Length: 321
Image 1 (cartoon, rainbow, N blue to C red):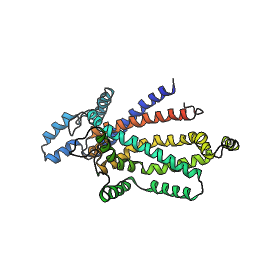
Image 2: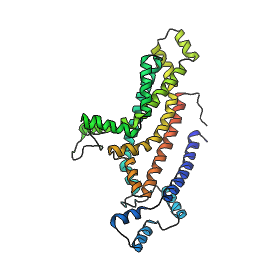
Image 3: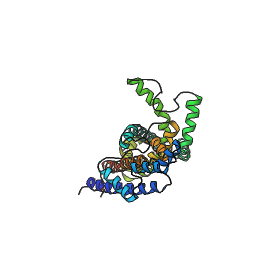
Image 4: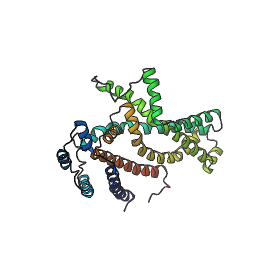
C-alpha cells in the first residue's frame, strides 16, 4: 500500500472519530435550536415544541441520531439547518470561498514576509538589523489577533480612512471586472494582516534559526571556500533546506486559521465559515455547526497530506512511512 493510500485510509478513520467527538460535545451542551426558536417566537406550548423536535429528529436517542448522521455524511448529505431549514452543504458552499481566500492569502503573506525577515536577520546576525527584526517578531507573536485587528481598524479605517471597515465588498454598489477585484482586495487587507500577524513572527524566528543552523554545515563551508558570495550561498544552498520546518509549521497554521477566522471574520464582518460558525453556536444550530467542523477537519487533513508531499519534494532524503 502506497504512502498516499495509507494516509487516505487514516484520514477516513480520523474523520469518523472527529464526527463522533464533535457530536457528543455539541449535544452535551444545554439547549438546542428549538429552545432558541421558542424563545424568539415566544412559543411555550409543549406539544408544539415536541412536534418541532420530532420533525428535526431531535426526539431520537443520541445513538440513533449519530448513526443517521454517519449515513447522511456517507451520502454527502450534511443535513438541513434547524434555523433556516436550508441544506447545510449549500450554506457551507456559499461561505467556503470567502474563508479559503482569507486562509490562503494569510498563509502566503505570513510565509513570504516571515521568510524574508528571517533571512535578513540570519544573514546579518548580531547586528542592529537582526536585533530590530527579532524584537519585531517577538512583538508580533505576543500580540493577540483581536487586538491587532482592532488597532488596524482604528488606524487605517477610522483614523486615516484608507481601508473599508467591514464586509467583503462595498454594500449597495454593483461592481464588475477589475473594479470588483480591487474592491475585494481592499476589504481583504486588514483581515489577512490580522490573521497573519502572529505567524509572521513565528516564521521569522523559525527561518532565522533554521538558516543559522544550516549556514554552519560542512557543505556551506565548502561553498565559501570555493569563493561563492554570501547571497549565492544563501539562495542556492541554504534556503531550500531552511524551508522544511516552515512548511511543517504551515500545516499547523492551516489548522489554527479556522479558529482564528472566527475572531477575525466576526471583527471585520467577513462572510466566511468562521462567522457562520459563530452564529450557529449562539443559535444552537448543531447540524450546521457539525457540518462546518467536518469540512474544517477535511481541509486540515488534506493540507497535512500536501505538506508531507511538499516535504518529500524539498528534501529527497525524507521518506515518509
